[in-house]
Length: 231
Image (cartoon, rainbow, N blue to C red; front, side, top):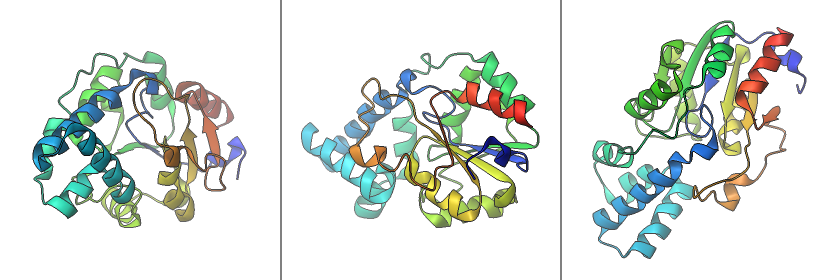
């Protein structure tokens, strides 16, 4: 399904957090990437350039840098999450139009993130939308197994009780929409131009026009407003 009419049966709206609910131009990932590399550098006693390579390789191979550090190096995941998310959230704007659009969506609204709940709450507090969400399912609730692993989506469904056939998933990474598509969700790729120092890798940019992406937008608020007019 590629028409907006595909949203008429949706009663559960699932949003990724980073670079999805806030604009990529906020560039929070620049800050997080610096801290990820610094953590790898310190934990593994590596030079900066080597730590950067390891961080990116773990991200690609395991879904998150954290997962790689846990599997290969046995680090404390909560210590890592606290360190990486100790950032300045001021670039995230208060967003009343986004709030109005999400609030108007019929049914449940959920966040499904590879970050943790404290990071999600600090971000949505800045946006002014925290109270709109019924549940935040984070990487800790996922037993520290990140998207796009299918077992994590299954855990998300078991925890929240959603019906995938009546759900829509909003994500900024194409690979994280493969499983939602296969489960029957309406998928939306948030695809803004690459800005700042987020260092998006070539493999992350692939498959934007693949069959598992039903809709694509560079403006979440505008897209939701358009969807609402069709409901």
